Length: 245
Ligand code: A2H
Image 1 (tube, rainbow, N blue to C red):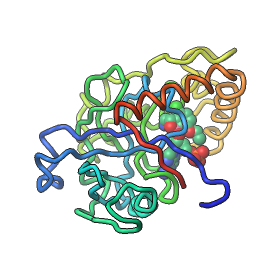
Image 2: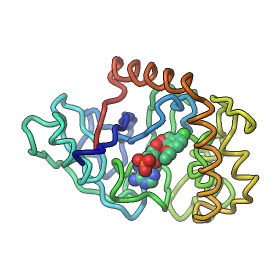
Image 3: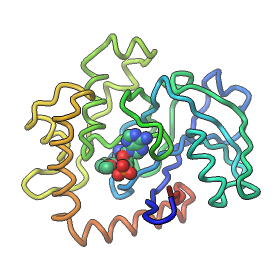
Image 4: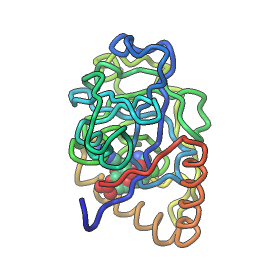
C-alpha cells in the first residue's frame, strides 16, 4: 500500500444462471467473480476461474449495483478506491467459502470458450489480489499445473463436485509466441521441469522464472503496448476495472 502500490486489472467474470444455491438470494442481480491479473493481454486464453475451497470470500454491493465476490481484505481496499457509495463503507451481503460456489458457470471477457467454470486451486494466497484468480494455462505454469491436476485426477474432481465437462473440454489456447519457448510457454516449461502437480513449489518457481522472463522482456515493447490497449478496451466495455494494493 502507498508507495509501491501494484496496479491490477480486475477481470469481471459474470456468474451465469442458475446460480449455486448459496447465491440464491442474489437471483436476478448481476454477480461477478473478480480476478486480479497482471496480464490482461492473455485473457483470450482463459479456460476457467480459480477459487480456494477453504478460503472465505464475501459478496458485496458496488456503487454501480453490481455484486462482486472476492476476499473481504480486497473488498475493504476497494471501498477506499471508489467502488462503494462512500469511502471505507462496505455493504457485505453474504459470506461464503470457495467450495460453496465451485462449479458455477461464468461468462468471461475475450475467452474463446462460451462459458467457463469456477474450479479449485489449493495454492491461492489470502493476502494477494482478490483471492479469485483467472486461469490462463497457456502462459501461467501455476494455472497449467492446477488444470492438469484436475484433468488427471478424477478423485480430485469428485472431491469438489466438479463434473468432467467443466474440465476435460478445456485446453490451453495459444496466444503469445514467446521466443525459444513457443506459443504454449507454460506447457513447455511444465514439461521441461517435469512438474507433477500444483504443489511442486520449487519446480514451478523455475518454470515461472523461465516463462515470465522471456514473456515480459523479450516480448518487449510489443507486449507492453498490447497490455495497455487490451486493458483500455476491457475498461471501456465495463468488463474490467483497475484495482490497487
Ligand atoms: B496472473 P503478483 Cl497468464 N494467489 O494472471 C496466487 N496467485 C494469485 C493471486 C493469489 N491470491 N492473485 C493473483 N494471482 C496470480 C494471469 C497470469 C498471471 C499469467 C501469467 C503470469 C501471472 C493468469 N493467471 O502472474 O504477486 C495472477 O496470475 C505472474 C506473477 O502480484 C496474477 O496475474 O506479482 C499474479 O498472480 C499476481 O501476482
